[in-house]
Length: 184
Image (cartoon, rainbow, N blue to C red; front, side, top):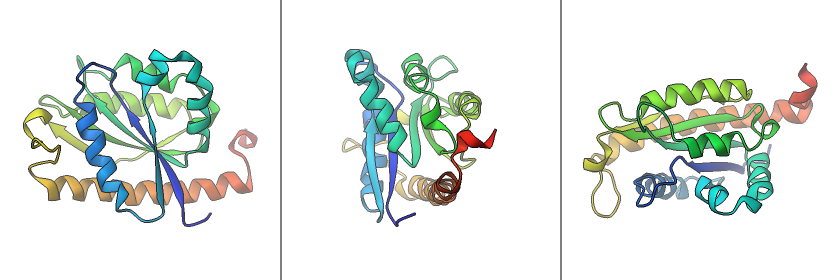
């Protein structure tokens, strides 16, 4: 594998005025400083509003080496539009790692993440144990979209990212030697 990898940064919400933009923009700003990482944005709002983009979104998922899902928790679960995006393809998720940045009320979106782990397991993806969670997120970011407690959030993000990158490199090598679909 080359030193470069592509990470698909996935929006978990399509709501108008979504707080997801704030969290995605913070993650994106942190990833810009990471050498050897190319980030592509994957937004279920685009799929919902422009169904003809489904093939392009599938291609983006196919080309990504790893994913970070930024998800809210709505009613103790992840949003339906995120499920629709995930279910829009099957094999492109195989043998790729997925990390999570969640936000919500008191649980910080962790219930949504636990449900997503089950979904991604069914898609033969590897989920990161380490994640970033923002409980009562609306009170944790300043007007510019930065966490008030930047260093703990950044430390959690980069721990997850280091492990995500390790899995991405390892799984890419394995897929290059033997495509995952040939494993069964």
